[in-house]
Length: 325
Ligand code: PEP
Ligand code: MG
Image (cartoon, rainbow, N blue to C red; front, side, top):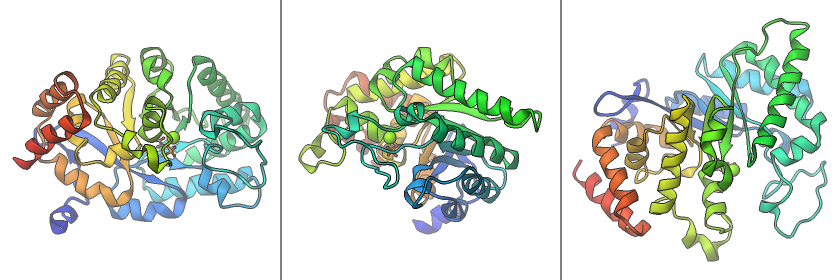
């Protein structure tokens, strides 16, 4: 099996009927790029930039960050890199940026909410990113966006930083794609509106599931509510993908679900464009993808969403089909 996977390291990510997709890597720092390339990643679909901050004893400077983003872009040899702006708070504290203790940290002060309150921290990161974009195809995405106002505020700060850097270097950062995570339920529901304001979506299923089922992603007692295959949840994912495509907005997924073999036929059937996962899952996913027909998968997704009632039923349905290939 593993030999079969290895043969696909330089192969494109295509379905049985020849449709092309992207299978990318999730990374936490630029040193992870080597493994991503070794596993044949089509790009980096999620660079969790908070690890740069968590691995430092001070707020990383613009230059320190620039070096890290540049290293990732150079290491990917022209393949795209999506960097997510700082996503701390919730389960990820920063020792040198004391945040108030909270009753409900996952519902509290985190990610873009902190960045919009601290534009100096946000601008340092955005400037570093814009400078690094000279070294390869870079995309930036904002985490935990729930309202259009938050998205517009983030974009405005980005535009300000870019205009400022362009007074010295005209054109710098003009090719940067801007996107947002879909991980707050309202953003998923309102995807049609959001799609008109970004180049791409990336569905963060770890948080999107946590918030939709109102179940803490780290609490074992409620782990039974982690149900990526729940038909109602699949319907929401399909709504996001359809909304994106109505507005020519590319739709990616970078939560755990993207690398789940049982979910793959369903996501392929819904037309998801990019699958970002841990590097070790890439070749398994590419191999399975090559055996799946998108039209058959579309029917399967339709059945899962419209005929099944529980996630167990969806699992049984998909496993039955997968058993046949
Ligand atoms: C997610 O929420 O699905 C995601 C990819 O982000 P993180 O796991 O870093 O919250
Ligand atoms: Mg998240």
